[in-house]
Image 1 (cartoon, rainbow, N blue to C red):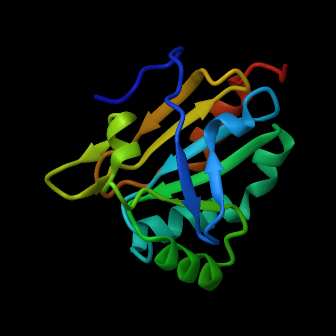
Image 2 (image 1 turned 60 degrees about the vertical axis):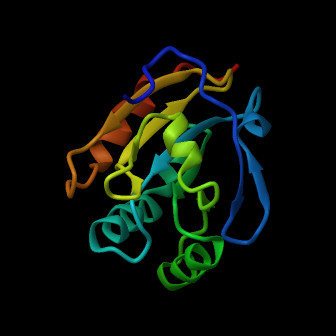
Length: 156
């Protein structure tokens, strides 16, 4: 079961597509975070979703929100995909232990071996303020992100 709104987001430390360490707690007190779980790099729906995020990155910047994608892919796969598609936001490898962070957030699908399409909008204090999950195979819409960002409390 996915984590509920108004709860503290579990901290984590993962490597991005460049091998850099990213910790959720590093943003606390500085920026809100949109944590975007997706099943697999190079898949059709995931590519479409992340290209839409890439094309609307200003929406996140305008709200002072750091965009972080996360999947069970390796950092090498994520880097190749990011370079191919021109993603300039961090893609985090929840590779090993396999899907550990997705499990903490309650969105890992053990029968499939990857995370569901789930988004958690986390404020500057580390509290989940909005979340949405789509049915398998269904892309998240930019309108859902826009609505969630508009409801985010002003920065600390």
